[in-house]
Image (cartoon, rainbow, N blue to C red; front, side, top):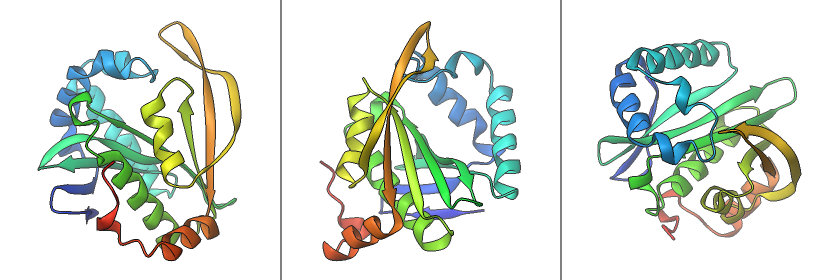
Length: 195
């Protein structure tokens, strides 16, 4: 199983069916919070729905199409981060993520996204990574902004969430932009600010 330690409190692990019960409990507890920006929470109504989703993501991982990781904070699942789409032919990938509300404001997702970028650019033939965020989700849009992504534009009314159409901002970063930033600032992954 893929397991990656970011720091003493934070780890990424390939999502597997054994995580389904804990992941479903987190989803269920945060259903109203997640429904503000994501279309799927009402489709996940029982543990077996989460199990089926994880199994699908493992199949996509085996085919090189995606990688779905559970974020562990102090040994508890705090959320999810993924390359939802890996387009190997074009060398691009799209990142998606969510956290339980109780885990926001701790710098968890900023560290997790930065680590996923590092892994993607170092170990996969990815040339560009995108993050699409709901325009109104300022906590989510702050992450690519802090990590040096470029705002590449707005897609209007691209996602229907709770009977409302949302605009999404497209953020993108190229391999050379990430590496330039990473090396010029002398970053070590564990030194990333929590702010």
